[in-house]
Image (cartoon, rainbow, N blue to C red; front, side, top):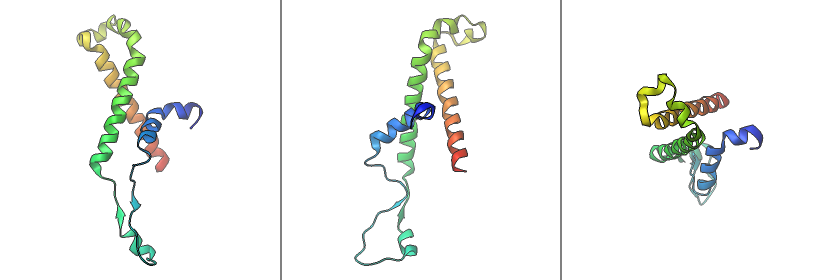
Length: 117
C-alpha cells in the first residue's frame, strides 16, 4: 500500500513480508491422481492453526508496542509532570506505550472487521 494506509498498515505489512512464503491460510492442500469434484475438494480444506495465528498477533502487538514506545520516549518528562499521571511514577512510559499499543490494535481490528463485513 501507498500513502497513509501504507503507513498505518506498516506492522501488518512487515509481518506479511517476513512470513509470506510459508504462511498457510485456509486453502486446499492435496494432490489427486484424477479430477476431483468441487465438493470433494472443499472437504479437504486445511484451517489455520490457532496457535500460529496467536503467535503472529503477539508479534504484531509487540512491534506496535515498540513503535509507540519509540514515539513517546521523547515526551516522558512531560508526562511525569502531569499531576494525574503521578501515581504511575517511573513506569509511566510502560503504561502509556501499553495503552497506546492496545488502543491502536483495537482500532486496526475494528477497521479490518469493518472492511470484511
